[in-house]
Length: 323
Image 1 (cartoon, one colour):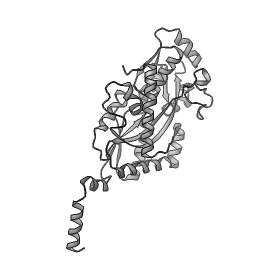
Image 2: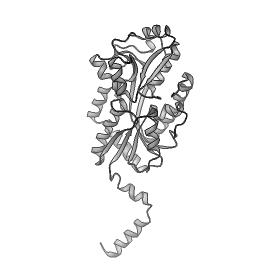
Image 3: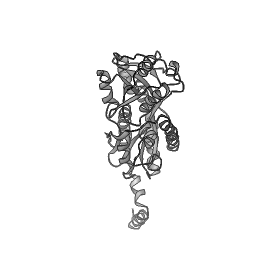
Image 4: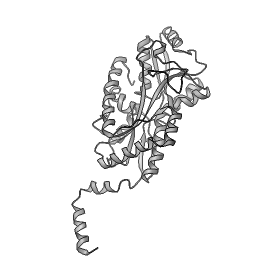
């Protein structure tokens, strides 16, 4: 290369905006994938699947980091304030981005305005599960026992603002039972106590409960699907047990701070959608009872916007709070 040509190239590169130069090298260092719940729950499981496969495809470490607290809003607020350079991402989900912004009074972010939404990674069904020794072994039992108790029924929740929290409150509203949510910092810690019998009732996402339902340490008494779940064909829906229109599911995706470079967003979206089609991942999702959706960044953003609207109506109808 001649001296004159080299000088011309250097002069041209000096005119490029600094972010454009940096984006061309992405990823040049490890990426943090922040998980807003404790280890052991569905959010954590999905995050670890994504992190392992993204690391292989991007050629840089992708570190899954659990930061539970405040209905998944603590971690989400921190990521919203991070540099939009593609190195700090969060597992956005139905709690942190769909429900908590309405449920909590002082959430320090806007689900839409403060994030770049990248890809939807999984959706999962919800079940009402009990310890096999719990006094209520059906929804009919639950209603009968709950109505006879002015102080109501305790049920474990994996965090304020989760779809499982709101489903428990909806069941209480529909049946006239006072439902008392017992807060845990994720499904993992809640499952320990439910299996031990400390709390007998749990509304949970299927991926974290299914191993215990299969080995008999937990029992499902209802699923919150429109039809029976293919993984639990012998468990009736809430609708079949006298609670119509009582469907609920959870979703999990990847988002970053507002203002991420479009090229980085498109690369991440492309890689995540490809990961979801890998035979090993599809098999793992089947074991977890999770579904793998396929959405562009724009579709995922529109999806979240609708979820905020729908869950806002549920929060107001049930009178649920984060207190």
